[in-house]
Image (cartoon, rainbow, N blue to C red; front, side):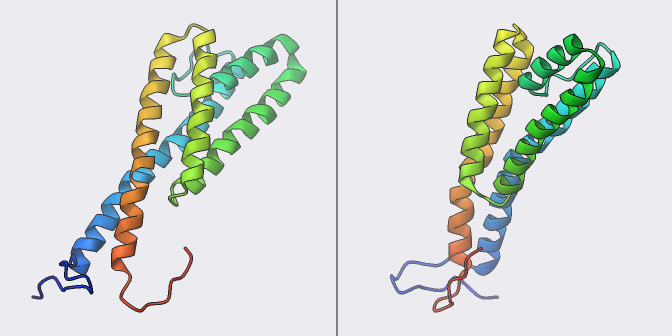
Length: 170
C-alpha cells in the first residue's frame, strides 16, 4: 500500500485512487444536472403527442413553449399537427444538444440551456401554471448543481495527469 506522494511544491498529492474517486463523483454530479435537459426534451414531446391526441393530460416537466405551440396547432386544425411536431421536435432537439454537450462538462451548454429554460419558465408564468413554474425553478436548481460540478471535475482531471505527460485536448 502506498502513501500519498509529494509534488514539486512539497504539498502532499492525493493518491490516484482518491483522485479517480473524486473524478467519478464530479462526473456523476455533472451528468445528473445535464440529464435534466434530456428529461425536459422527451417529456415535452410526450406532452405534444398527448395534446394532439386530445388526451387532456400533460406532464408539468415539459416546456412552456411546447404548450404554446400545441395551443396554436389546435387552432390551425389538421395541418397544424404536423407543424406542431416539427416545431416542438426542433425545440426538443435543441435541449438534446444541450444535454449532449453538458454531460461532457461544457459550461456553455449549461449556461445557454439554463437561460432558455428560465425564459421558458416565464412562458409558463404567462399561462399561470404555477406548479410548472415551481418545477422549472427546481429544474433550474438541479441544472445549476450539475454546472457547479464542472470545476471539481476539471481539478480532479488535472490531478490525475502524471508529471511530464503531454496535455491532450478532451
